[in-house]
Length: 461
Image 1 (cartoon, rainbow, N blue to C red):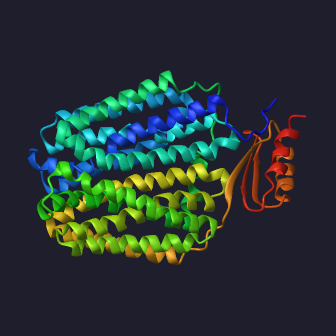
Image 2: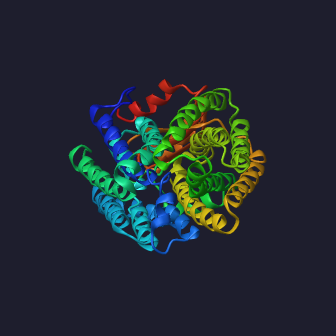
Image 3: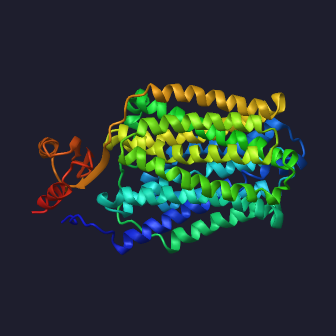
């Protein structure tokens, strides 16, 4: 007998959501803390060049992109917890390698190993194993929020910790955080009774062709690639500007980042509401890309001025936070509900490749053309992205919706999908017999959730 739909999560589901979000957050905190301080620390490493500094910052993105989807597929066969444990151990080893390295090449190897511990997709798959379909979106949203909080905390904590324990100490702390994640995994995360493939959260190889041929999704993939390329690129040069141009020692850089991140978060919220509630997603999205480009020009023109850099960084992080929240929402709106996992897998790979490209290009451009080259290049990429955004189709204001319908054969699945399509607000429906799940795209302002709940309960009778 299948469980009926409920408005609240069970204690086990809440425990799974909180514990998996904490594992994700611990890992990302370790990765992000190095961003605001590494460029200055790297000056003292043997064999350093501007290009290699950028590679060290971004190399984790390359290995993360290469391994995250394969790790997810492997976890379907050998179990989620074993793959997550192996990934976190690899991440810890990479952190130790970076901590003890006295050469830039050693740090690059360590950062590459950190990224190779690519467990993001596996964590999401485990979250899907441990939660019912009707609560899965809330759990995924909670994990997404934990990433945003980790990033903001890391930008402030990185400079503080650099003063107390140095950059090698941050790498050692990162290793401890990874081991802490393993402890959380085995002591707090429930063990799933069964492993299932979840097309709404996991990549499915058979769907790659369709996802990679969808031009609207490719525009969003280019967008997240560009966004994280810009983010990584600016951290190759901004620490130098704050120290050398504005006269701030690295341990005081958090005095800039803390108010900027708080103000950017507050400034972002009204635009999120306008985009979602007022259905102005395309306009807000395009405007944020334009602001991102303006912020890059502002950094170029600031010329070491503290006020100028603060203003430009505020614009940048307001746009960054808004785009970071909007892009996955757009992917979910455009991708069919039953291939959202594959679409998000490709999207995440593009994000990590962007981090690598940003590090490499930021380092190479700063060495050849100075800070101006980094900012003007990033502004040019933003301009290309803006053109792609303003010419994209208006996104459908639809949400993914899953219903556990139980065991059905192919004929029953087809008939059930036809019935679901007749319900008010249901725009897409597919029932997969092997999953016993109906994957829907619905207009939440029109759909009758009580009517949809009946499809779950009637299959029990």
